[in-house]
Image 1 (tube, rainbow, N blue to C red):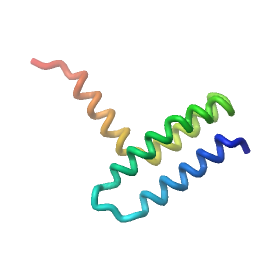
Image 2 (tube, rainbow, N blue to C red; image 1 turned 90 degrees about the vertical axis):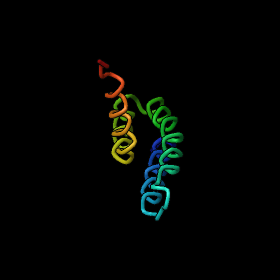
Image 3 (cartoon, one colour; image 1 turned 180 degrees about the horizontal axis):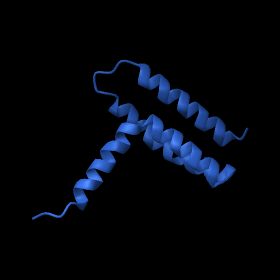
Image 4 (cartoon, helix red, strand yellow; image 1 turned 45 degrees about the vertical axis):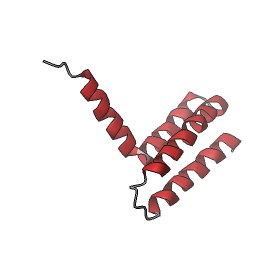
Amino acid sequence: MTSSLILAFLWGVLANVSAMLPSKRNHWPAAWMLMATGVPIVGFVTYQNGPLTGLLVLAAGISVLRWPVIYLTRWLKTLRKPSL
């Protein structure tokens, strides 16, 4: 197993542990930190293991951080609506 896949695995464990911790701030600071560290890890996985493995790791990350992705798609849809 390559070092990039080990980092991706540790990122997934950290994401799940941070989701289990109680938070008064709705987990958004943890989500921002996971996004900031997850993007370079996905790039590193893609560089070391190829694009298919990179896409699988990206899909795993999106499944963990689904609410930021949902909010991003909603925001992008509001930008595309024509104003009257």
